[in-house]
Length: 177
Ligand SMILES: [Zn+2]
Image (cartoon, rainbow, N blue to C red):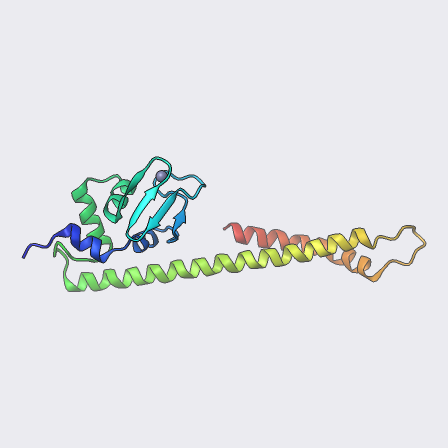
């Protein structure tokens, strides 16, 4: 039986899955994976994509083809392989099973990395807020003369700000990893 590879791919691999699989954010508008840049030129609607700059539009097959710069046939084989579709029937059950688990492990790893990144981001802003608080208190409660009894918040800020600066720098390094 001959399977129509194009139809098979289109029905089994969504644009969202393809974006996720190749490491992109699966949102409706993202920076274009094909030409790069920061603007969210790339729109996904159902199983079609469109770049509002100059990359054109198409389906999941043309996306993979353009991204990897492959021939049409090469693209079909790549998708077949990457998504374990087995359209071309070249892989044994054991290979498919292994590939499937590899894919699951990869997804789990991406998910973990995403969470770590969010956590690091949250931590950074927490340290940032604390640093700003100390910095503001240092200004707001500074004694106006050497004889004046220093305000407790001023003393606290004076004691903590250097270490807080260090924590902030550490959090910044972690979030940029
Ligand atoms: Zn583009």
